[in-house]
Amino acid sequence: MDQGSDGRRNLVAGFGALLGFLLYGFFLLYRRDFAPGREHWIAGFADGKLHASRLAHAHGNLLALVNVAIGLFLHRLGRSTPATRAASWFAVAGLAMPVGIAMEAHLGAPPYPVLVGGATAAVSVALCLGLAVGESRARTEPPPAR
Image 1 (cartoon, one colour):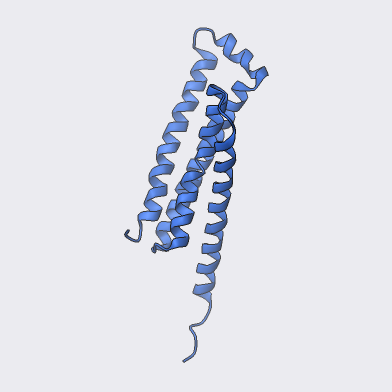
Image 2 (image 1 turned 90 degrees about the horizontal axis):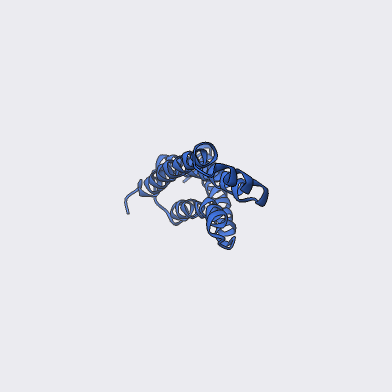
């Protein structure tokens, strides 16, 4: 695996998810304002289906942008290590959160992907924080004396 592939993975996943959840937002807008039977869809807000759909759209776009930011950060680090690979894959897995919310809303799926996605996104951000702190310390510490 070359040095920038960890970051590229997140850039591709992030921009792909951003496109997908933006299109999902247009679908929600269509259902609310233009679709036949839109009154029934709006009435679904009371049972949480519309609210959950909006949560999926908002969290999907947020986590897509988090993947883009992590991708740029990992690319800037310029190396592939077990920690960078883990941070990259955990960030991609974090996209399970909004997908799980949408599956809950539309298919009645259990909330497990939401929990797993939220946890993996948090772990990814924590790993990136550790990588950033380590990189900052490495740049400010003088080289060891011989």
